[in-house]
Length: 249
Image (tube, rainbow, N blue to C red):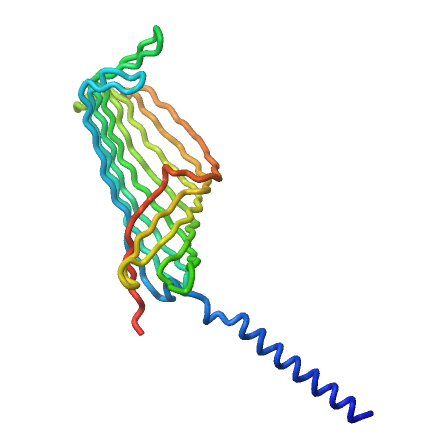
C-alpha cells in the first residue's frame, strides 16, 4: 500500500512540475514584439502652411469674394520611453492665422448680407503632456498602433476690425482653453529603426474655455464654454515624422 501511495505522489509531482514549466513558457514576455526599447528618445513633430487669394470669386450663396489669407502651424514634440512600448512626452505648438477680406456678400432669396474691409489676425500657443502606449503589429517590429492620453492647454489672442491699421477700433479677444484628450494613431519605420512616419486622429476629449473680449476699447464681454466628444474627428488629423535615438549600451 505504501508503495502505491509513493507512486501516486511521484506522478502528481511530475505533472505539476511540467504544468508549471508550460505556464512560464506561455507567459514569457521576452517574445512580445518591441517597437521601441526602454530608454529610447523620440523627437519630431508636424508643420503646415496654407494660403488663398480670391478675386471676384463666388461660392454657393457667397458672391463677389475678394480676399487674401494664410495659416501657419508648427508643432514640435519629444518623448522618452520609460519602458518597452511605453513613453511619456510633450508637444509645444504655435499657429498664426490671417484673413483680409475686402468684399463679399451672401445672398439668399431676398436677403443680402455684405462684408467690406474685414480683417482678422489670430495667434495661438498650444501645450500638451501625454503618455503614449504602443501595440506593435506582427513580429516585424516596423509598424505599430499607438494611443496618446494626456492634458492640453492653449492660449490665443485675436483682433478683428474693419481695417488693418493701428486704430484701436475693433474687437480684441484673449482665449484660454484646458482639457484632456485621447488620440489613437499608427506609426511605421521608413529607415531602419531611426526615422518613422505617423498619423493620429482625435477620438475623445473634454475641454473648458474662457474668452475675454474688448470691443473698441470700450465695452467688455466674457464667454465660457465646455465640450465633451467621443467620436472620430477628422479635423484634428495630424501627420508627421519622428526620429528615434536609442540608449547607449
